Length: 418
Image 1 (tube, rainbow, N blue to C red):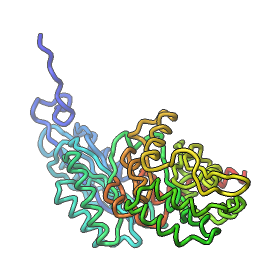
Image 2 (tube, helix red, strand yellow):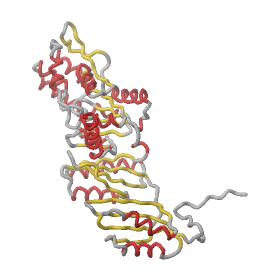
Image 3 (tube, rainbow, N blue to C red):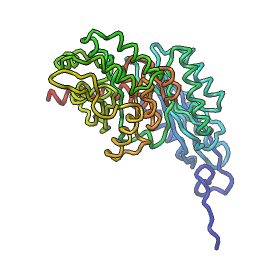
Image 4 (tube, rainbow, N blue to C red):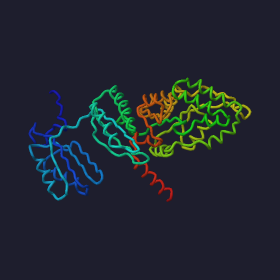
């Protein structure tokens, strides 16, 4: 006897209903939010024999929108139930209209960040999505401080190539309107434990360590000019590093402690690290800077994995040379892979954050590559680009709301007091 395939939930008739008579209906309830509306809707639907396919409920400014997609037998039974609900004294409006079974297209998350977040900017970005056949299924606020951020759940039938084009187009359009728009994949790749690898200079911290050291040698301007050329990708990083380190020849190692004290974390860096640690994420630093400064900084933030250059010292002074292979863009990507293997984290669940051309390989290797206040060449190639001066703006890209962060901080404060 040949096997048969059971009907899908979207088309299967309800028990006791003749085949082919099931209809898909979208029920929408709107009005002032109050207790009991959700319960009243599903009580009203119970005697109709309907089956629930999808439900969505949101409250914005005290106004409720509740939608339920159902299949039902016969004509008019759900419509009649909805009409009764509208007249049940709940001060809500209820409608029923023909619906379509849920689709399973590719799902994306589009995060918008602005200070302020203006309607015109949102209009332009969502128009780009519509032009490319992408549908906005849901919008939720991720945070209002230090920037306003919202997340759009988007469905699309596009290919990987279409996704790359969408990412670039959204970034350009958002930038024209003073907005950041970042596209990240949906699904399991976004959930669970991750490895987050960060660049240090001008990413985790606000300065370039080599420039802080060079200032003690009186050659800060000379080093800064070489740094800028290297970060734009105009100069080989290894050669530029050696050229800059040569400026430190004869400098006492005692200045390292002063440089450590002068280092300023990027706003939001502690919040980012603290929150990711709470979630069980593993953090790592990879830097073209120097272990003498990066190592203690990592320890202060509870970061276990570090890869950075080491300066050669003889008789208490720097020789102007680097020990061992230079940590360049290839070495940064290799470190990301090494740390992921050591932690048992697949590359699809790694995140790389950086700002310069020497971060490009690790940004490309990571499951999610984020350009943070980056040079144009990096913004163009990263999965997501942030141009706000707060490192914790990365959190919404990982699906973490500001309210989640603040609630965890408050709970930890209460626990520490108790």
